[in-house]
Amino acid sequence: MSDYDIAVIPGDGIGQEVTPAAVDVLESLDIDFVFHEADAGDAVLAETGQALPQETYDLAASSDATLFGAAGETAADVILPLRTAVDSFVNVRPAKAYPGIDAVRPETDLVFLRENTEGVYAGHEDRLSDDLSTLTRVVTDSASRRLAEYACDFVDDRGLEGFTVVHKANVMRETDGRFRDAVVDVADDHGLETNEVLMDAFATHVCLDPTQFDVVVCPNLAGDVLSDLAAGLVGGLGLLPSANVGPERALFEPVHGTAPDIAGDGVANPAAAVLSAAMLLEYLGHDEEGSAVRMAVESVLESGPRTPDLGGDASTADVTGAVIDRL
Ligand code: NAI
Ligand code: MG
Image (cartoon, rainbow, N blue to C red; front, top):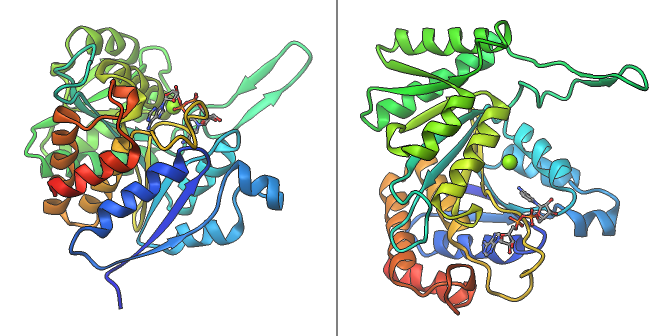
C-alpha cells in the first residue's frame, strides 16, 4: 500500500508540460506516492462535451491531494468545482521574490490567506431589469472563523506573533464588519495580534513597503486582486504557486494559466508548478522535503539554467533536471 494517492490533472496548454515536471520532482523523493492522472479542460470538453468529467471530480474528492496544471477557456468550469471537490475554504498564495529574478520589489515575502468560498464570488447575481443588475455578497461567521482558525495555526507554525486583516468594514459595515469581527475574535482567543488595514490602503502600502507584511488574511475578491498585485511586485505570475486547502484534502496549482503563446514548445517555466508541489509536501507533513524542493528551485532560479521567460534558453526538461540534481 502506498502512503499517498495523488490526483494529477494537467489540463490544457503548458499544464501538460509543467505538471509532469512537478510529478518528476515528487517521484525523485523517497516518499511512496501513487499518481492517478485524469482529464479536465478545453480539450476534454471538445472530445466529450464536459470540461470536468465526473471521474476527475471524484478522483480529486477522494485523493489525499491533487496537483492541477491549468485549463484554458473552461478554467472557471474546472477550477471552481475542483475547489469544491476538496472543500477548500482557504486559498494560500505566497508572493516571494527570488534572488536573481528581476522584481519590482525584491524584498517582497508575504503570504495571502484568501477566503475561498463566499464574498462576491458566491455566485448570487441577478439581472432585475434592462437597466439594473445586482450582486449579493455573502459573508458568514462560520466561514470567516474557519479561515481565521487556519490563519492562527499558520502563523503559530511559523513563530509569528499575528497577522494582517484586510477589509473594507468602514464601507461594507455589515459584511466586512462581520468578517473583521470574526477574524479578530478568533485571533484574540489564540492570543495573537491583528493589524487591520483597509483594502485600498493596503494596495498602496504593499507597493511602497511590502516588508511590513507577513501573513495577510482577506475576503475572497480582495485576496484575488491583492495577491495578483503582489505577483507583479515579485516578477510576474509565472513563478507563483498556490494551495486550495480543505479540512481533509487540498489542491495545488500554479497561479498562471495555459500560456497558449508558448504551449507545445517545451519551454514553459516549471518553477510555479514545482513550488506548488513543495506546498503539497508541506501539507502532507513532509516539511523537510518541501523546503528541500523550495531551496532547489531557488538555487536553479538564481544560477540557472533558466527558461526564456527569465531570459534564458533552457527547456522545461533542463530546468526540471537541474532541480532534481540539486535535490
Ligand atoms: P497565462 O498565465 O496563461 O499567460 C500570461 C503570460 O505569462 C503569457 O505570455 C505566458 O506565456 C506567460 N507565462 C505564464 N506561465 C508561464 C510559465 N510557466 N512559463 C513561462 N511563461 C509563462 O495567462 P493568460 O494568457 O491570461 O491566459 C491564458 C489561458 O489560461 C486563458 O484561456 C485563461 O482562461 C487560462 N487561465 C487558466 C487559469 C487556471 O486554470 N487556473 C488561470 C489563469 C488563466
Ligand atoms: Mg485571479
